[in-house]
Image (cartoon, rainbow, N blue to C red; front, side, top):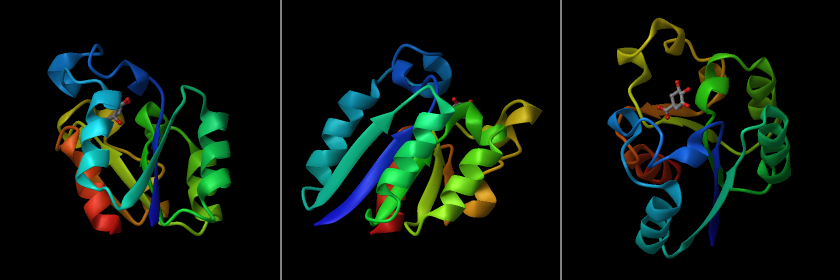
Length: 138
Ligand code: DQA
């Protein structure tokens, strides 16, 4: 069975309630149930944290065993050299995802410090960005 680790960063625990006009009105837990039903042969593990170091710890913990990591680093995307280094440190391919099209938004969201370390980037397709990332990894 393939193992894919989904990692969500800061404020993504509030999906469904946070700026629904930007991020939609569905909780991630609800979406994840659907995603797991869609891929019964894939072990989809999920971790969310608002703390940068915990995201790094999770990448270290799964990054040598998982078949892939889907990472929405939230705002740390735009600030974190430490996450960039963690992605480079592990062997699993990491797909950077964003729910919104960050390039249509404020200028400070246009720059990602993690993209160059990732296998690829998917953004702007709402929660479907995660499914597209699963497809890319499979
Ligand atoms: C986000 C985009 C980021 O700029 C923002 O800080 C987030 C969510 C997205 O999924 O669209 O928290 O990563």
